[in-house]
Image (cartoon, rainbow, N blue to C red):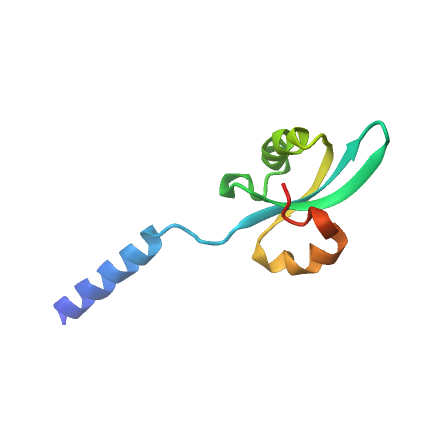
Length: 97
């Protein structure tokens, strides 16, 4: 009986030690000047930025700037469950940056 308990405890410990595999995303608004253009987009962000709009802003600002865009704001952060509902609105900016 003790052996079975030890095996179950070891299995539970190993399962908790595995990293979470859920991805994290942010939806944002960005703009360009000359000519003035705006877009709504969805981008994958680091796991440590999930749930933190300020961290997501820092993660996206440089990526967007490399494409000539200025980040206006991060609207929200979310997991895989919110990804498909935002795809149509993001259009060509869906997971682009």
